[in-house]
Amino acid sequence: MKKLVMMVLTIATLFVVIPKPLHAQEYQVKAGDSLWKVARDFNTSVTELYQLNDLDSERIFPGQILKIEEEEIIHLIERGDTLYALANRYEVTVLDLMNWNQLTSDLIITGNELVIYPTAEAVEADQEKAAQTVQAVIKEEPAKKASSESKTLTMTATAYTAECDGCSGITYTGLDLNKDRNMKVVAVDPSVIPLGTRVHVEGYGEAVAGDIGGAIKGNKIDIHVPTKDEAYSWGVREVTVTILE
Image (cartoon, rainbow, N blue to C red; front, side):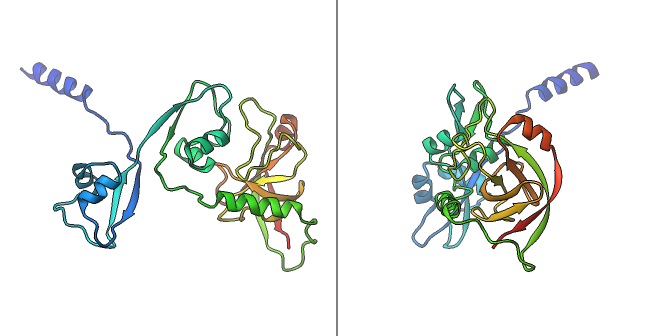
């Protein structure tokens, strides 16, 4: 009898369903909303809203925040696909795609899958504005030399190149590094160094903050270099980064 109980428990354990992580957006209830209206507007069900928000009645009130499960698309990567092209196709951002799929670069491999949430709020809604800012900065005259009041940061710097299989060579702000392999561009965390900022990187020179990366968080930057050999040669360094006027 004891063996039978153990077998039943073992079989039951094998069939435990592990729920997949939920990806949800938030909606702030407006005057005149009802649970039924919200469910209809977001193409979901009242039951799902009840479960997702632990509701015990159908009453909702203005200002209340409701979680709403987002539509999920699984995209099978095909030859010729790039993150930049897929972001345009699904009307999301490159940063969204990188964050959702835990990517550390824009390299994607044919045959792999990407998860996409087309109804999600963009992580960086100002991508077009950032691109315009970067283009304007590039057209300007070189920045003035750093003054005694210039902001200086100590950062960890890695290097990347457009010279790699599967890399698009297109930065988050739309710069085409394939057309100019010598372009001085750095990937940054926009919360630390805003996109479009002119900087001077120790050992690299003057550059524009024109790209981002899934692994570039906090006091980290990724410098663009023309070739793989130069990227390997750079390695990982601690550098001084000066924000130029």
